[in-house]
Image 1 (cartoon, one colour):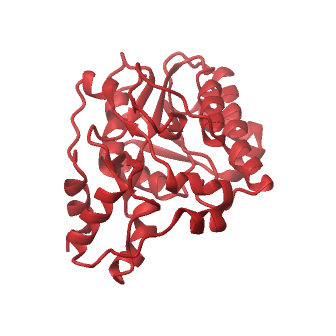
Image 2 (image 1 turned 90 degrees about the vertical axis):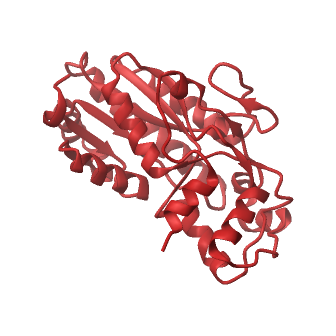
Image 3 (image 1 turned 45 degrees about the vertical axis):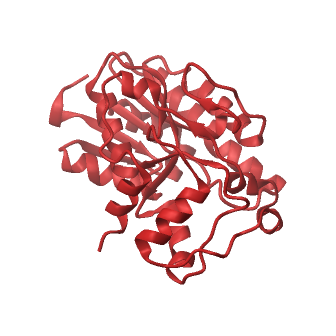
Length: 287
């Protein structure tokens, strides 16, 4: 793999807020960014060319999990991840892949929500999201190069989950979700980007990494901290049955949560800049 500023990243899934952040972050570090858009997955020659030219391939493809999980949408959730990841892996394996790094994505939703999970001691869940994550990871690990799969916690930044929460809280209409006891494992988007840079720099790393801070909280704690930082009341809970009416099976994304610890990242020497929910939200919401 070429060193330093001469490296090229093929960014697959750049339209979301994580992809946009990584594009800016690595551009500022003098990486060349090749965007792999949705149409490229319909053209094997174009996809293969972009993958061939890259030193690092970042895979963020996948439909948004927040939504009503109809049968049709569940198919989209699955295929947008597994089918497109397979196309990326096939492209990697058709070229001179030995020096490439494939950074693929998964989610902590692969775990159960009744124990503390790290990469060595864990219990898998038994949900549709678990099924997606398992197959997603299995497909990514077929790449014949160095592969790292990051199991994302809830990524907090300018967009995504935090953006969806802020409207209600700023109006004083925020509150806990369901009974508020569900675990909430999270990561500041800046630390997510730093972790990706850490993977690139440390060529001895591969396999699965939990990408969340070591300080999981509960939804009750999240509600309390948001209310305090925004100086707004938060006394209107969002009951589980309402979410079930809105999202069907997809409500589990909000009413359940996994308590996850990033053992491998910490043991590899990575240090989070924003370890606590207070630090994360104070940085994101200051001013």
